[in-house]
Image (cartoon, rainbow, N blue to C red; front, top):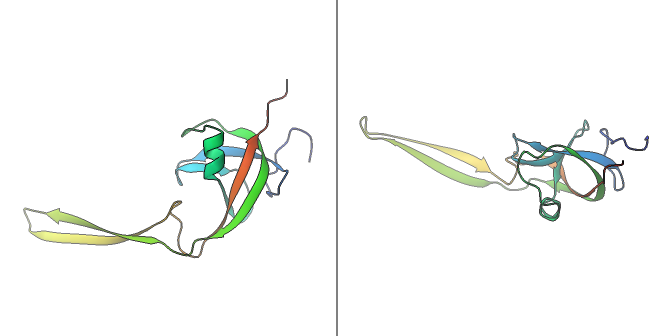
Length: 117
């Protein structure tokens, strides 16, 4: 890998990566063309002081953790329509990233790489 470039095909400890906001998952992810999603760990979001919709930035991977969605929270939502006296409800499975049960992904801790002058 060239100096100053990011690895978009993998994510190993020590790799330079691009971190970006993803509206679909409502969190920061690592730009990666591999088979797994790479979510930025909550500790890194906090320590970097990140907010929603921040510009992408270069970071170095310091830790990664392989995860599997094992459980989901089932939420029952009700919709009442008074005039027609009908009751509709649906069940929604939820977890932190809104991923289906059985999905594999990584949670990754990073540190920001200072831009070179």
